[in-house]
Amino acid sequence: MNAKTVLPAVAMTAVSMVLTLAVVVMWLGTAVPWPVALVVGLGIDGGWLATLAYERRLAAQGDHSRAVTAVGWSFGLIAAGVLVAHALTAEESAGAWLAVAWLPIAAKALWLVHGLWERTALTPAALGAIRGIQQEARDEAAVSRARLRAEAATEETRLTAVTEAGARVARVQAKTAQELSRAWSTLETARDGEDTGRALTSVTRCVTPGVTPRWELPVWGPTEPVAALPLDAGPALTDEALGTLVDQIRHSESPALSYREMAARFRAAGHSASEVRLRAAWKRVAA
Image (tube, rainbow, N blue to C red; front, side):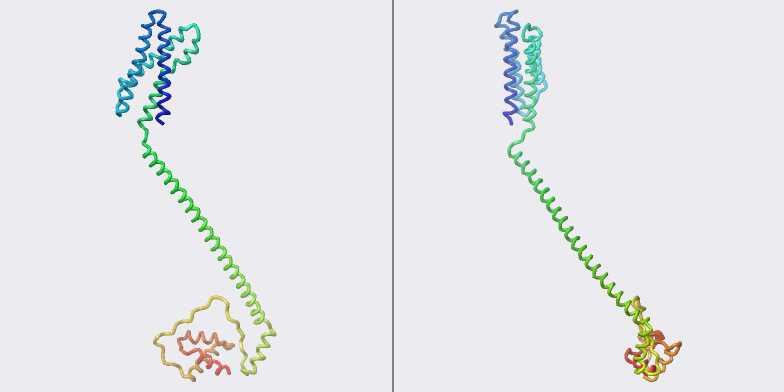
């Protein structure tokens, strides 16, 4: 990079110095002896070259002088002015001389660019460290993007699996509810049918003569919790007392209560008896 910036500046400076010297010799050679014109041209070029060398020395030391820079730009402007004046007074090829009159200013601008590059140039080690840091940042960004894509794919798969499982559960529940509904409808039809009731009554009349049973299906729906028995309940009832109490509760309404209604009122009244004894007492009373 150093050669890429310094070689154009050196070449343009050399061309500008040659053109300045040639123009001064041709322009002043008609008015003064040519050795004098040559000395004037070499003086302009020599002053320009001296200030440029001094600027480069200060730049190498990390220093800068505004006075030296101003003198260098002055020599460059003088050289450009000589070229412009010669182009304006030349009878032939005036446009060509004007086309090259900017070369001294361009040479100074290239040296300015080269100085800026030197002040901001980095060593190969620093450039390698910067490239390593940039590569590491690119690697981390790529890994982060890959991790996010993988997590998104995993989450999508999980949501798909959960959705499919939920759909299967919903289908099973709907199928079960449909089957229960059909079974309940069948039971309701059997209970409400007149022929079914007479058939059940004729079957049970031989088992429990004189008793007209009430056939009721279990309730499909919310149930009422049975009140808990107190811990300090009284002594257990005897079979005779239990039978008397069951008979009283059973015939408390007309027609006679079913076993389930009688058991619910029996326990709601605070009485205590096992299910086996209570059902046996109800069968004795009903018989």
